Amino acid sequence: MVYRVQGVVVREKNAPATIETVIVPDPGPGEAVVDIITSGVCHTDLHYKQGGISDEFPFLLGHEATGRVAAVGEGVTEVAVGDRVILNWRAVCGQCRACAKGQAQYCFNTHNATQKMTLEDGTELSAALGIGAFIEKTLVAAGQCTKIDEESDAAAVGLLGCGVMAGIGAAINTGAIALGESVAVIGCGGVGTAAIAGAQLAGATTIIAVDIDDAKLEQARSFGATHTVNSRGTDPVAAIQELTGGFGADVVIDAVGRPETYRQAFYARDLAGRVVLVGVPTPEMTLELPLLDVFGRGGTLKSSWYGDCLPSRDFAMLIDQYKLGRLDLDGFVTERIGLGDVEAAFAKMADGTVLRSVVEL
Ligand SMILES: NC(=O)c1ccc[n+]([C@@H]2O[C@H](COP(=O)([O-])OP(=O)(O)OC[C@H]3O[C@@H](n4cnc5c(N)ncnc54)[C@H](O)[C@@H]3O)[C@@H](O)[C@H]2O)c1
Ligand SMILES: [Zn+2]
Ligand SMILES: [Zn+2]
Image (cartoon, rainbow, N blue to C red):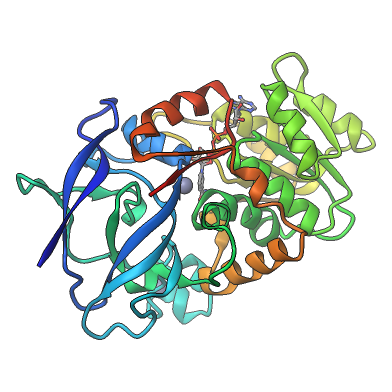
């Protein structure tokens, strides 16, 4: 048996995202078919559309989702039909050298579904981040389903499936922010704002939000930013130094991922401080820095894939923080839209008018 469902596809580089009929196979061994409830629009979906991630078009977009397991294949024990889940893109293998060292958050062999979803003419689709969630039903590896509670709002907690987890994890896991530290976050979209919320959860006392959009900066204050800098008119390095006793922040998180923002992050941190790159660069970007500065300033330069999270450990913990009122996941949901509105949501993302548009199915 196969399912014929509607999903949002980009056929070629920069083509508009359109609704197409997609054929979803019955789950094979180790796979699950999931009815999607909500799926957030992440900047990474736009990167896919623009050909910035790979050129394996056509793509089935969407990857930040809550759903309900509709069917499971042979040998699946992780989840059962009817479970409410967040989809994740880190189904760890348990066997690679990272997993063997007890560092499954760096797993080098994460699982996706083995079978492919296709268009009606049989063309295989590449699912964004191995998920593809702007669709009525999707096919994933069972390990990509993380069971969650029944009561929390699907649109809000589903954002933990990518951007919000990436941002919070960049602060808490990768940045290892400690009580009383100073933090600057460059780029206050969904990911950067989540990094600000994560810095606050971790007990940072100076949290500086940097963006080129005043509305984003204003919003960042409600998630815990103590200071804001509009880097369109102000040098963010000098501003961050001034706000941190002349030295720079203990941790600077680049949630944009461009050479100029990385350079700002590099110089805006204190000596021996940490830089965390969580924004995703595109293939043509390069960076040149005086090697003596890399050496002389000490400290650590880290990248954060998915906030170095472990879905099984972090999703439920963060939903608990949300329920306790310590993490405002509702505040990330700017608008709730339909499957046909994804292209318009990309335009709003570019205009800076939304933190997250969330597709409801
Ligand atoms: N590392 C990961 O695992 C991971 C996960 C999800 C998303 N991402 C990446 O994180 C980045 C941000 O994603 P998002 O969904 O928050 O995007 P977004 O479009 O919602 O936000 C980007 C923000 O950056 C600001 N900005 C743009 N250029 C800037 C500049 N030069 N200086 C300061 N601010 C600037 C924009 O005004 C906007 O507020 C993207 O590159 C995305 O692909 C990474
Ligand atoms: Zn592994
Ligand atoms: Zn994403």
